[in-house]
Length: 193
Picture (cartoon, rainbow, N blue to C red):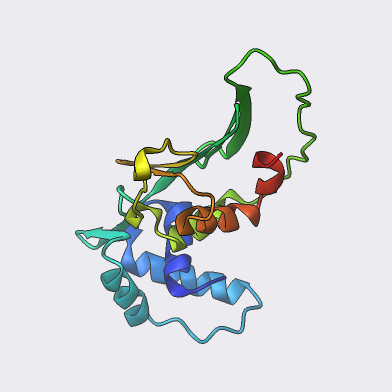
């Protein structure tokens, strides 16, 4: 079930903003209902995590919610490879994703649509993994050496939008996002020819 803050996120995702005591009760009942051998959850531990993760959680009148600046609603990855462009858009509110592919030139001779298996995956698990890598804290290398970006990541949250562009597939941020999404979708099959 993951670490404490992931459990809190899970409870908030399922229930919306709720009091700390209710988060604690739901976490305790979820541990009792599962065969997990976790150590017993303490209310003080829940309070401690919420107070330490002020960037992720907001508390108002003892009601806890995910910070709207960080509450992930959608992520889009854009990749430019030669004269082809690809876009993967994942919408967490509607739990759908789609892939687009297009060419900037009308000559598509030799282009064969990719045969890709589109699997079902847990949007909740992907979202939890995205929270771990804190995309909102990343830096962009847009315009480095006067070159056009080839890889763009756009993260939409409830109240904000973050856009990061990279010219190199080896950028550590691109590697992180690729690794996370590859757990759920075959990103190499989507973007690489």
